[in-house]
Image 1 (cartoon, rainbow, N blue to C red):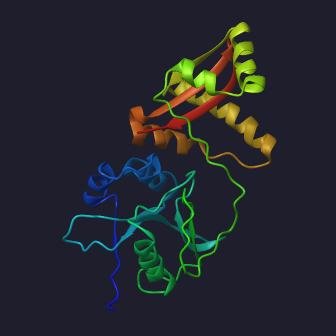
Image 2 (cartoon, rainbow, N blue to C red; image 1 turned 135 degrees about the vertical axis):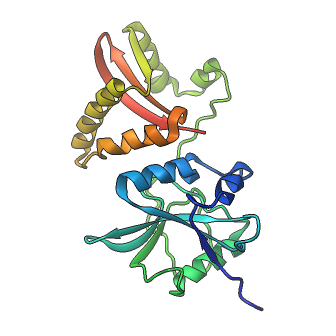
Image 3 (cartoon, helix red, strand yellow; image 1 turned 90 degrees about the horizontal axis):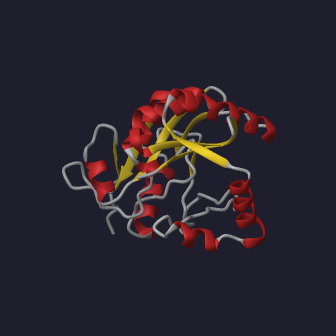
Length: 238
C-alpha cells in the first residue's frame, strides 16, 4: 500500500487552520492562532502544523507544534510549550500514526529534532517509537453551562463548599478584567506562588502578549479581602 504523504503548513499564515478549528469540536484555546501568536511574540517559537491534507485541499486534520531551538536543550518540537494540553486533531489512530511516522523516520519534515514532545488530553495507543513519559497529571473540567447553584451543589461539602461559605462570611470579593494595574497585582501574587513551589515565574511579557493577542478571551481574576489581594488567576477561553 502506498504511503500517505505528510505536509507542513504555517498556521499563522494559512487561513485554512482557523477555518478548520471552527468546525473541530476538540479545539481548545491552545490551538488558536491567537495563542500561537502570543508564543511567537514572547518566546520566538515558530508554530507549524503537520497534516495529511494536500496544500490545495481543505484541511481535515492537523497536529500543531512549536519549533523550539535552544542552546541549552537543543532543537525540539513541542505540542505545545506553556500550554496545559494540546490534542492532536486527527480522525483516528491511523492518521496520527501516519503523521508521527513521518516525523519519526527523520524525513525532511522532522529537520533532525533532538526530541519531540506532545501533551494530548487522550492517550493514543499506537505503534511508534514514541513513549509515555508520565501519567502524574490530572485534567479537571468544569461544566460552566450549569447554573451557579448547580455548580455549588456539585462541590465537595466538607472542604470546597465550607471554604466558599467562609469566604462569603469574611466579605471576600474579586475583580476581573485586563487592565495593567490588575495584571501587576496578579503578577506579584504569581511570583509569590512560584517562589513557594521552587520554580521561576513566566515573564510578565507573556501575560501582556496573551492580552494583546487574545483580547476579550482573557480575563484576570483577583480575590480581595478589603483592599488586600488574596489570590490571583488568569484564564483564557473560547
